[in-house]
Length: 368
Image (tube, rainbow, N blue to C red; front, side, top):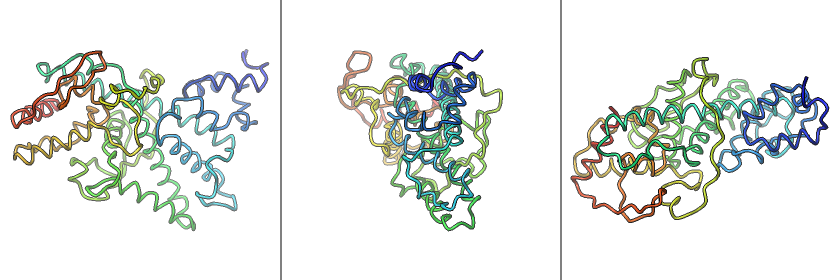
């Protein structure tokens, strides 16, 4: 018997609002025909903004707006017979139909599972490599610690943009002769502009890292071979990876699923170790450190070709991790005395050519 069968809509709505993640909401829809009926026949009872407000996504910069863009594209796809086909014409805050609402619950739950699978896969590879190849450089065991909010935020951000990019491509094919196709193509060109040395958006490596891990887990990116170069070295306007399906094969489904941790407080410690939420276009400090290290090595004439080969680094998560995880593994310089998340104080180190060369050796050793 459905335990929710006799509950009024108001109680069901309250229950849904207390579920902090989309996997939980999707599971409730699967076990209760009554709850699913509320979503199908009374979509105003629980709308997208209600769901966003009760879940972790609302605290992740840029993710809620991308979520809404994906929802708008789906609404346009299921309403192709509408007189108004302009993807810009509908307000992001206008009510969504039940088909789009249920679609977005499924999509968000799928992305939550993928985020957990990607993070676990990258951390497992990272920890194995650190323990195997960097045993003498390990500062503390926190290189294997729980995921910070910002690490999870980066994974979700990349996954939602991969989904948006894929849906835009699908919409462009559906509306190839439509007047609004120009606007769709322009959005795709904006994504293409994220790659290359002149890009104003520096977070493309996070997308490539998540895409590489998805590919290793069994998904297929059909548009673009993974570039071996970093953003500064590869040709301009390289297309982002395009996934035509986001359905994991059965063997990749058996990963734990969880909610991200609470949003961190804006403290000196969290600021120092790249653990706070900043502007959506700010790349990880791990990415910045990599480029700084590479620039210094090139000035000294010490840069190994292998350190510019990006695919292994992407799969090890170094462009997703916060600075504390990288430092704990011996993969980051500290140039000033700063408090540590474990309660101590990290002392500044003197940086000279020898230490730069040693840091390159650590990064190369991480590759295995």
